[in-house]
Length: 261
Image (cartoon, rainbow, N blue to C red; front, side):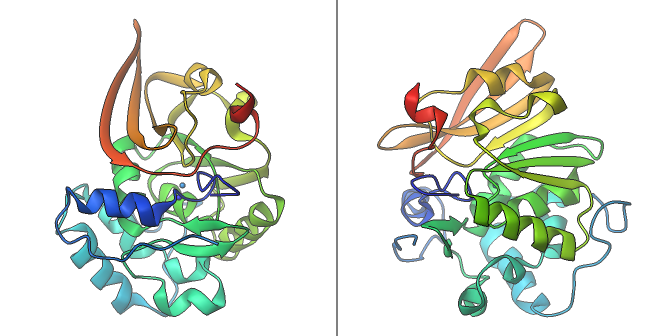
């Protein structure tokens, strides 16, 4: 789900990506919109979703995820637990569970719930996984990852968003997430290797530093392309890297170092 021409820093130009997905996924009916990345009670994770919009959250899961191809029970449980309304500006909270991205300021968005769940499911996370997220944005995707993995390291290029996400995640008790401000192109080498890496902005190539920081057996999901992209999954093996492509999407470009390569 993130950042000046880089919703991959929080989110793809998701409204448009959503329209593309609507061509191939049943139930995708949200209009195009222009924007302004384990079991309960595990130590270090949110022990219990706070009260508030549980009914809306349950309906979101039932109607937007289970009717499509989100089948991993751990991902479904995480999407039921994380309070999406806490990651959007106050004037957007009534729309928090709509089937669409929402603006979070700084020309960035929080991703459509389906995209969050789809990309999370594609990583095939285990409870002991260490995950890198490039593009913190609102922090919502990081919270979902934190429900499933042991540790999440998230990088956000926009200072204000990094600070806001860090505060929100701390308030909700996600002690297993670290957020830092910076350019995610180079990854987080001092914490490598990672069992999974998620990128939420679109470069025109896969950054080699991210591939280098992927553990053997690890998976990286990233939108790749210029005008239109494809969600691409790379799996590191003992012999090299295997690559698969999945959904056609339209994310905004990754900014920073990616633009100079």
